Image 1: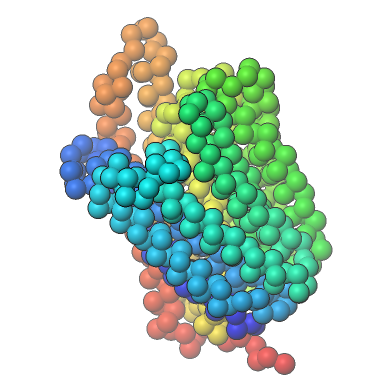
Image 2: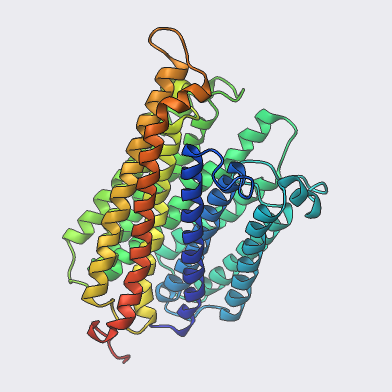
Length: 467
């Protein structure tokens, strides 16, 4: 670790991993409830489990992004963080608010939660992914603004690089589009129109800038490739991501009552969206091929390379499968959507956060990498998680195809009802549940690799002495 203030990333990474475990646990609860309808009912109803599962995903990824930023910005700017104290204060505010919100979901009925958090003053609750109480939304906004201020002040007084410029642009975009979570018009069409300005323009817009910056940083550090080469790639990827991602929002406007021209805009630009992910994959493997040194942290390199492959498959290939309006007419809201969502989030964002933790954590412990034994466990966890997630994706795709064929476009013209269709899909749901268990095992292997690293740290190469 080159700068003392980089240590601020530790609590963010640790809390992110804790929340990640929680997300997996509630994902398994949901998988079980698909096949055993009253599993853990009434203690944890399906709607509550789903709300906790999706909210934990958002909260832990944001926490991981903040930790990654606090780690890489001092190195990129070549100066200490503007205010480590502010970073610690914001961490505890974020951790306490996030924890209390999840406890609120589990402890009281959602209507009661809305009442006791004064949602009636500024109604924002009750929308998918944006279920947080208004007071929590305000807290997130305050934390993110304070976080951006801290990072921006650090960048202004230090070296300016393409990586931290792209990163801060993505972070500012994240904050700006979060403001639309407070806009809750009475018109359902208008509500969904702007709801996507948070959900889509986060994950298929500004989050891609954050992902690209972290990926570029890890590749520069582990391959030794010239910064100029990496930065040219990064400019090209980000330009393509923004052009396709912003107008690609139209693929959510197909059937909500928006004007007809969105059918064309959404279809055309959504078809372009796989290109930046393909370019990221080519970029990563080109940098690895051109590397000037063999970095001892092979696990971090594996995470970075694997991230681009899985992101291209999940966000690119599976996104394209059902993004054109004539196809989406039949597949919208089916299990095919769930297949795309699971693989895209895991490939693009979960894996990049795990990659930066894999690279940064040993550095913060005073070594270049974890021991060879620890890395073997970690690389095995990559394979387990990736194979399990691919299996989940393929199973959900199969479930979606059955759903569409039986419920929406039956060959004999006699459509099954929703619940009858679910009975047909049930064997696939069982298989999906066991693949979810396998994925959970992979997560535990990843965490265990750091336990092995602590036991075998003497075998890991230490950081070079400071000049």
